Length: 247
Ligand code: 9D3
Image 1 (spheres, protein in one colour):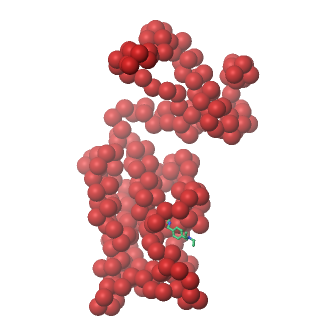
Image 2 (tube, helix red, strand yellow):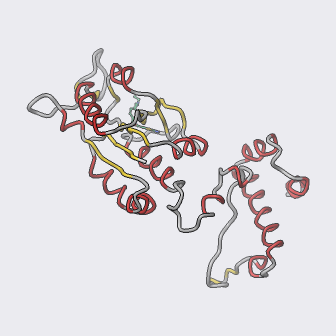
């Protein structure tokens, strides 16, 4: 998979792409990440990439031309017809299902906006999808782009040490859409706090019952909407319902 990132901060992308799961995926040749700076494709001596908005108002708008020239350079290096993804607060909210779809593709060209936004004519001409992380305001698209990169990298086969790790993610349908249960490690007692005895019993069936109940309780408490979704999808057993009724 090849990911190209158009950003005014390519150093930030390079640093992110070098560490953790993304770095490991890149080392193993499963993923390559290339940063591109539209400023290198500016047409004037000042290397301008932004200008004042027509119609007035606060902030600056990214110029279409440096972005178009930068994108043309990226496309000249790619052999596939990769989708152009713009990270934008007006985009569709990214979720686990979306990450899974992106993780099976050949990659994408990620465009990170800065300032108030990008000249709409560039978006209309070149952008295939707009994605958002949610209804809160960031100062640019770099962190959302790195969020998608990280989420996609860890779903690549052979990236996580433990093949089962992402099978147990919250939001993975394999967990029936419930939140994860609490985790504990050594020592058995820390600052007077003990590990739940069920986990020390060595009785695997009981451990799974305990974990399922913890997931149900955590989900009912923090994300009752997910309980409703799981129930509607027929993912809750009779035993699950009995436990939930007793909470
Ligand atoms: C507060 C300014 N906004 C209205 C006047 C417009 C605005 C422009 C650009 C708000 C944020 C940004 C920069 N944000 C992103 O590029 C962005 C983002 C986000 O802010 N929140 C969630 N997901 C994303 S994806 C890209």
